[in-house]
Image 1 (cartoon, chains in turn brown, orange):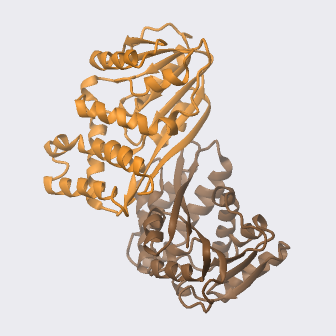
Image 2 (cartoon, rainbow over the protein chains, first blue to last red; image 1 turned 180 degrees about the vertical axis):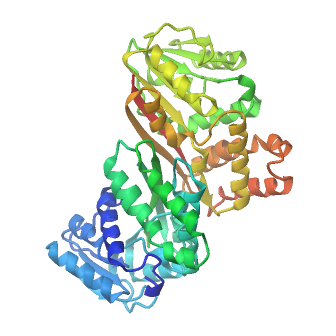
Image 3 (tube, each protein chain N blue to C red; image 1 turned 90 degrees about the horizontal axis):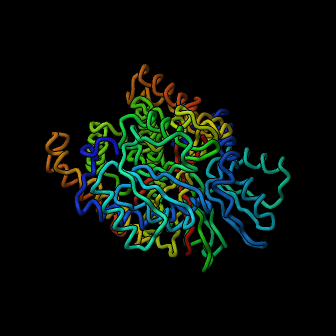
Length: 269
Length: 269
């Protein structure tokens, strides 16, 4: 969302695989308590390639999901994924979160997952989304927080690589530490009855699915994805980068551990 | 535990109040899934002033708790607390975790909460505790991780004050980042079937009990407790310290948030 060229993770094939891995591994943790009743109309903001859309469509089969994104390429990928999965309760819409032409009171619910972190004006976007909700409607926001990542063995080099991602996202206008701010952010945007619940991912070698699906293929792959930009921006030298990424993979070995926390907020208009 | 003069938080009256506040606020989060069956004999290692002992005694009224600590003063306080609360299923024992004279196979279960973080040889202590367990017995370990603390608004000064506590605890031979290492630590000490579950404390102003009981009276009070030693050790200057502590209290105001994670491990001999 926002200006699409600023999406810090890019639009490569590996990025699409990463998002799919991420969605599979985390679907239960993030979405198990999200269900929309029959007949309700739900706006999914920034659906991207549909990684969350399939979960929304499956969990709420009798709701209509309006999946919106600014990128035509992403929407095409999302549409293909939804069609091939056989869902018929999703419609697609190319639009910008700041300039949507929806009439007020158009949606029963709004859903936004991993979107606000990329916006330069998240409060403005939320205030706008509040207007398109029907009275009594709810918004559900899910965001990560890269400052919530810690691991064993500890490594200053690994932390340096993560700081590169945080800094690049900040330079693109985003905020990858946004998870911890959802409560005050939603209140400041006019929402009421804000409830935030953290969703912590804890990984040790007794959980091999998370070692692969989260530590390696979600988090470390995400950090690796900004290598060229981090080096080009002079945020880190090549040797430190390689050492840091190696140390992140080291946390996926037998005696390593990894922690990361997502935040899910539900609020009422 | 360990050499008592090295206990980083000291033995002051305010420290006792802090530990009592902490135990009340966190009892449900940390202990709700700990119950020992009638007739079982449980060694509580490093019971301190009995903050966890009262919870153990209450939750498992028909088990016998052997509450052990190296400090006679702490044991006296713990005994007074237990007696005044009316529990009769606790006996007290002054001993060092490294040199206890228990025969092997003496206990059905071992319980250690906020103890390993203060030991210079936690692996050795755990291997020793494994020997005093009966075959099939379990150990339960609960530890914090000061590197798991993050908050809004972000503050480098506040993080500096926390690093002072981490550094002082390390200089005293402890490890306040031990929570994330419990899984490999227990395996390396010979335990089997290790299961670690994180217990995250998330605080925003919709949770006033945690704002008071955790952000202010547990975590920030704990950091404040090392002020004189941090300044004397030259780890921080007075101005930065005051700013940092102020910023920690700032996270307890209306639009602040605070996150911290405890780790609970259960393993079999």
